[in-house]
Image (cartoon, rainbow, N blue to C red; front, side):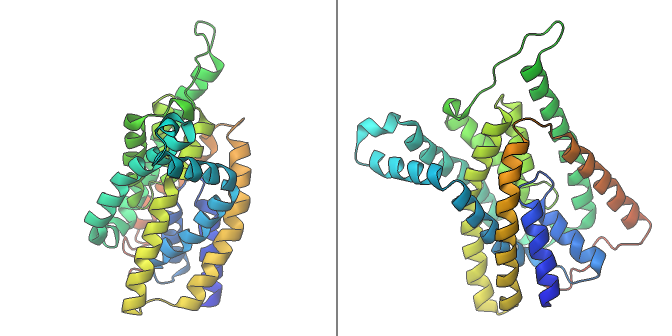
Length: 291
């Protein structure tokens, strides 16, 4: 991998990680359109450490409060009813599905799931799902001529059941094209949470999964030697810088705006990809020779 490739892929990772459009799909497609080798699941996992570092810094006050309360709740029973302590447990519970499925489906994630036809299908299907969830949220928030406004849930209403559902939604992002934030936010909107609450929990929930995946891939990559360390670390730094700017913008955007621009983009990109693969312009396995 060249330094130019690593810069572009790091830029793509930072721009797309927090938006509901799938960063893994865009890394895959960027390589395919440019005629580069597929950066691979290891590169994706490691560069995501950069974007998750942006989450750690952006939400540092929330995270510090949650971690502190969670540790105190281990020895102080009175703390177990504290919302921040409960959030610590809910992040752990919500991380279980992706942890189990990530290990179980590792070979599929690094192989068949990277087929561009699957990526196109998930872009479209999850785009429709996000669109429906967004419309439901808008109806609750705005009401209508014959419909009263309905109050949506916040993170104070989050329990173990909803935390697990969020977790299973997040696990769907193991398939390129689904989008971690897109799946978890959609699940949250269907369960009646506000856009801001669903997005905030989505970002917090991603921290253990992404960091664990990155460390796991670092260990494997170190043992195999099949990774260009310099360019990969450079891409990770670029992803961090761009990702921090994107998450700050996105958290402000969702408080007043609809997800429909992302829905339309996903569907159009999926259709374009199907057309290009069907016409033979792109192979469904374009760029998969590399790691």
